Length: 172
Image (cartoon, rainbow, N blue to C red; front, side):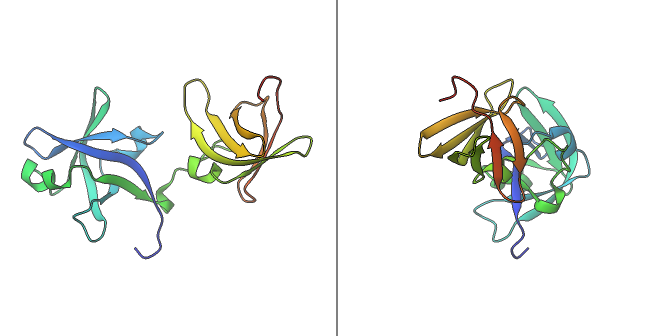
């Protein structure tokens, strides 16, 4: 495992029934792909000295949860001790994104500059309130909220951690 990076895709919040099923709160934009039968996830839990590799045996959605079971963990007693654990995927399992899509961890720390050359600060958070994401930028002018829409975000250069934006009226 060494210095491999992992990204959280869900939290194992509880068991479900007696057959080893667990309730998972999904934190991924791609639950269909992430929780597909046969996929491997890594469980991180305080009781484990290193991540436990799990293979998904079954999946169904229930209310706001994913209900999963794992191969070799067919009974509540096999899995109950891992409640509260986090389900993660290794970096190489990240989805290939479309050209204009980004992972939140790639955006955090990016420098934001206006199309007129003013440095606004760094992206410190990404909020997902609804129709479009909102990037939270902290810098000299305090906190600025930038909507992730074409009129506002002009250029995203992940490799150089740089974003060019157009300050629309009313953003400051």
